[in-house]
Amino acid sequence: MRHSYDPAPDRHARLGEAHHMAMELLGAAEQAGLFRAGVSESQLSREIQALGRELFGTFKHWHKRIVRAGPNTLCTYGGDPPDVLVREDDILFVDLGPLFGSWEADIGRTYVVGGDPDKIRMRDAIEAAWYSGRDYFKANRDSATGADLYGLAAEAARAQGYEFGNWHSGHLIGNFPHEIVQGEFQENYLHSGNHTRLCDPDGGGYPRTWIYEIHFVDRERGYGGFFEQWLELD
Image (cartoon, rainbow, N blue to C red; front, side):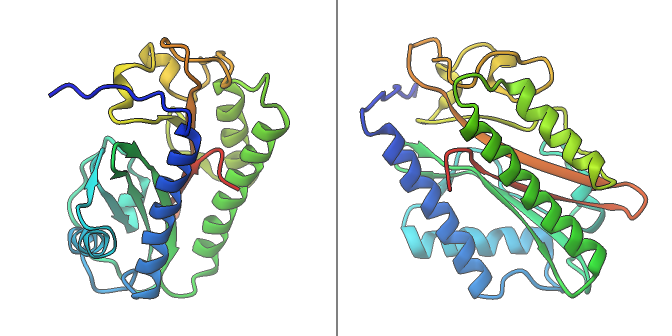
């Protein structure tokens, strides 16, 4: 079945609702103590899915659910590492793409199990880099490009002594499935070669809506971390 694109005038509000529900899900998972040692990545993923059904009824994802712990946090979305257990003093991240009605959300967070100061520093640096990029976008809304946002993310990683873990720092999101109408592949991502202004409309003349994502990795220590959400969120 081919889904239709809905350029509804309340599109911005509907996307906001979807993303706030995604944030509600992660908040509930934190409150329930799901991010703990001794659980496998696959089991934690199933628990998050079950919690989503409990909170929202029918609960689907527009992209695969990602739960990565320990050395698997070095992998990007496209990787397929073996399932591992979350260990004591570990670091893990989730990358979820819940679908609320016909509206996509995309959210990622890093969690530190225990009190390892290096892992906590990475987690906090990643979140700070996201908000720094968001603030740049808000201050330069009419001129900011995908290359600009990628460059900020990569430089933030270098400034903290990390590598940036991916070839892009975000992508489009919208009314499911967003890939049908949003344009050329290279224009759908925030990367060093995308000099299209983020405010430029898509092929149908509608505003593009962006997810900004930060993935830092520390090769020497053997782990990474991740943070993403809708660029328009405060």
